[in-house]
Length: 343
Ligand SMILES: Cc1ncc(COP(=O)(O)O)c(C=O)c1O
Image (spheres, rainbow, N blue to C red):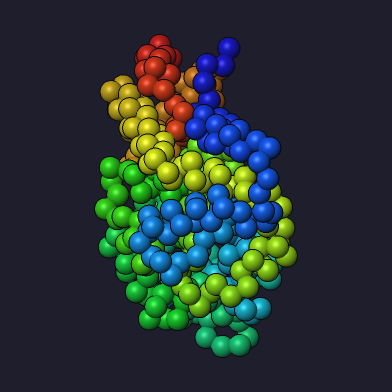
C-alpha cells in the first residue's frame, strides 16, 4: 500500500485558504484578462513585498509559460540565453525556448548553479555575427537540485550581467522555499534589485496553479501583455490567478507554506542522517537527495513515492525526496521509522 508520495510539491490541489478565496468570489462578475480588481490588488501586494514601485507584475498559468513568454519578450531574433545544463529551460521544457527561436547556451554548472566564470566563457566563445549573441542569463532560485544562490553569488552574477550588457532572468518556481530557507541570506527587495525579470511560483507553494512574473527592468515592460496573449498566456479568467496570489500574499500565507515545506525537508533529512545516510548535496530547501543502498530504495518504494535521481555506484543510488506546504510531521516521522525497518 502506498503511504505517501514525496515525488513533488504539486501533488495537493491547493491550500484551503486559496480555495476559500476562489469559492468566495463564486458568481461575482469581474473584468476579463487580468484587468480585475483582485489581480490589481495582488500585483500591488507583490510590488510592496519587493519594495519596487516601478516593477510590473503579470500572472500566468505555469512555469514553462512564464519562462518562455518572459525570455522571448526580451530577446531579439538572433539573441540567446545562457543557462546551466540542469536548468529547467535547458533540460525539462521540451525545447520551449528554442521553439521561440532563441538558442539556450548551456554550461555545466556546479550543484545546479551558474558561475561568473562560466558566463564569461560563453561570452568569449561568441564574438561575432556568425554565432548567436548571448543577451540573457538564466538562474533558478531554488535550483533544480534544491540549492540556493547566496546574496554574494547572485550579486556577482548580476554585476557580470550588467558589465556585459546581459539581462538576468530568475526562475522562481520554488522561490518560496528558497527565500524562506534558514540558509537564505537575501530578502525579496535585494533579489529584485539584482535581476531584470523573475517569477514567483504559486503552483509549488499552495496555489491551485499560477506564477507571478515580475518585470523589474522598466525597459522590458513594453507590450508585455501582447507577448502574453500571443503565446497563449493571457487567461480570459485571469482573475482566478489574481485571487489566488491575493490569498497567498495577504496574510503571509506564502511564507508560512514555504516554511512548512522546508521544515519538513529538514526533519526528513535529520531522519536520514540519524540512520547514517548522507546526501548528494547539502539539503537547503524542500528537495533533498539522500544516498541509499539501491535494494533499500526499492523496498521503500513499495510504500512511498520518490524518484531515483542518480546512480552513485552499482549498489548506491541518490534519491529525490520533495516535501510540500501540506506535508505533515506525522508522515515524516512514520517514514523515518519505516527507514529503520527497511535497513
Ligand atoms: C525550476 C522550475 N522551473 C519551471 C518549471 C516548469 O513549470 P510547469 O511544469 O508549470 O511548466 C518547473 C516545474 O517543474 C520547475 O521546477
